[in-house]
Length: 99
Image (cartoon, rainbow, N blue to C red; front, top):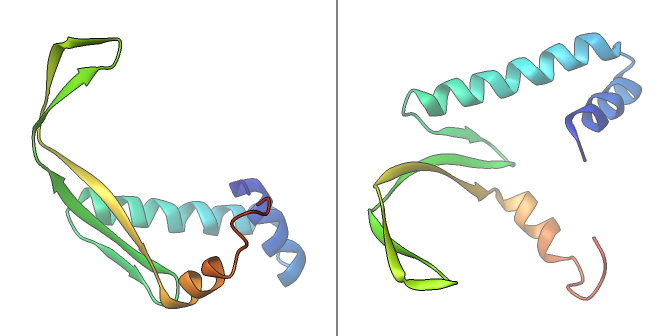
């Protein structure tokens, strides 16, 4: 699903025009991004938690040239932990099926 697909679905379910829905979806994503960029996590009940984690510096290797080592610096990454409802729905998926 793309952001456009999401906008179209919400618009058809609510009757709100697509331009307004698109603006709301984009503003929501912008606020989540800004909170994370400010060093704060975002918790959306029944959906999940976006949190920041520091990845330690480490040594990386090119699989084609394992003798060449590259220092990968410490950095901050975004982690997502799904909420209870999402977890329950996803675990019901058949691993052998297509999704």
